[in-house]
Length: 362
Image 1 (tube, rainbow, N blue to C red):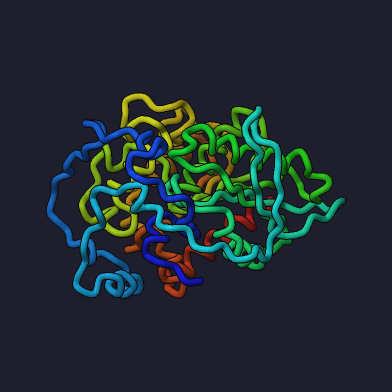
Image 2 (image 1 turned 180 degrees about the horizontal axis):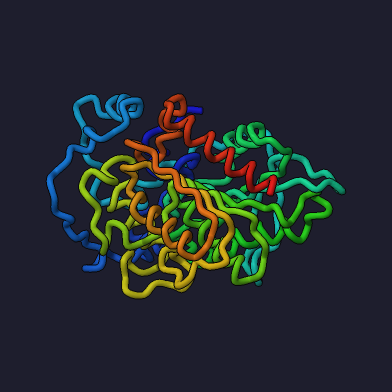
């Protein structure tokens, strides 16, 4: 699969598709303008060249994209710049489309199902949520990687990925409700699908990881069982890069503080880092993480999300949630999609597969 640098800047597995909105259109105007809450505090300390701390196997890919030297990403992202013209969608292969009822009167939700139902079986299942900075991406983009994941697992399973509504056209809790509708469909149809509702794992990458974490909290409060959550460089805290400082060498590549502020603001409907955000929208702001399912978190050491992901893992441990945290040295956001042959990418995938296998077997 050909992966562009702009694709990766919006989250692994998420090609950028969708309608381009002209400046001044209602949806674009709905994104709140930056305020004082969006300004980044300076961390201080010695300046570090971002390229000097990149894993050597991942460095060539970055340098290949910047033949005249590293240039920081656009500090003033727009919805137009982060949503190029949609590419023609090829015929769907390896998955079937399923339309399910939305949550409490919301629109119906489109799911893609990888694997065939087997009525009477008792297989585990995965609910996947794609990345895309909260503003881009589609479930179709994840099918190929999900088929590969399914083949790598020890047990046959059913995988469902959710084509949730995007921000800013749909603000929180629209996407959360869509993802919950997918989870509820798995629970309600477990017998006909041939799955064990007590062995449903939820997972996501980047913004999809943030959505998965929010779904785990919501499912806990709704009393719907989730066996484990697998979070790959998840976006968990709107305050990162807005009201919380980030050292200059962290988040300098692939997904940056300005992009993060834009994506969170689009989702929340208020500026990222605001004193008040919608309840349940930001996993890192949850009052309690007690009662969450077993958790796997993987993140690169120079990913913008590394500090918030480490802190979330710490809080999970303190809440007695079985937690595995994998911090990959010198890895930037989307490293596994950028350089899938790198040793660090193999290490991540092996750890993810092992964590899913454990969840399925326990």
